[in-house]
View: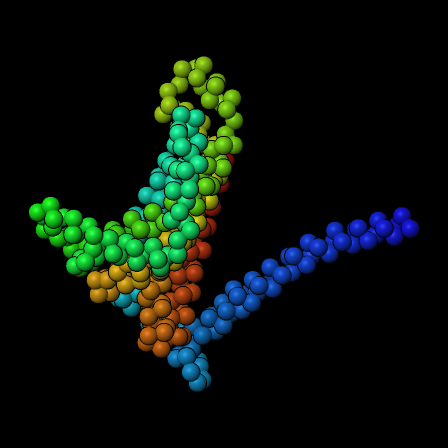
Amino acid sequence: MVFSASRRRHNSYTLAPLILISVNVLLFLTFFVWPAIIGLAYSFTSYTGVGDAPWVGLENYQELIGDADFYAALWRTLIYTACVVPLMFVMSLGIAYLLVSPYAKGKPVARVIFFLPWLISPIIAGVIWRWLFGENFGLVNFVITELGGDPVSWQSNGDLSLMIVVIVATWAGTAFNMLLFIAALKNVPVSYYEAADLDGANAWQKFRKITLPAIAPTSFIVMLLSTLHAMKEYTYFVAVNDGGPGTENNLIVQYIYETGFKRAQIGYASAASFVLLLILVIVAVLQLIASRRKGS
């Protein structure tokens, strides 16, 4: 009887993880692997979304090499990523550092306020900022004109339009990274700071010599996730200015969407998607190599 009960417990401990893992594996295969296989197959065809999918081999990829619109979207994506990732990193780390400071007041309320953007739908957040920076109806231009100034071309100027989306993405994305940094900062041993105080280190020296090295793994994760997310950004551009003015701020994902669904070039858009996937893999590998070298 004892052996039988022990065997039942052993089986339950073995089966439970397998069941939980199998559900996740099934979802991953259904919603990621299988669509990726279909997309890769379509990238070698001239499929339009209906009917047959004629095989064209590498023709889509060859055409993509000479596509100026693809390069323009990719370049704008790189500019956007180079702007939003460092800004989001500094903002989230700075706020987290203030929130774990023993001198800060009202921490629970501040955490809720800073975390609110994460709870808002990206579409809703984009619409809110669109009403703020609308060129003809926005609150900001209304205030400027009431103060006697000229309205600013927030949407008809491509650089200003991009800047607004960078601000929106930073505002919305800081919350999650802030939580990661708060957890990392709380795990830094207090004894390190006490020893630094005995040596007469100032606040900047403690931050540079103790805090930054201690939170390096979290910093790597934040940089990696932020970079990958920024290079796939789509929602904020559509909600704030629809990639405008014109197509000047169309990022690579928006280019893929419009090519595939508005121009009915599913095969060509699939080829562009796999080029983007290759770029993201390269970025992730380079960041991983840089992180390991720095850690060693």
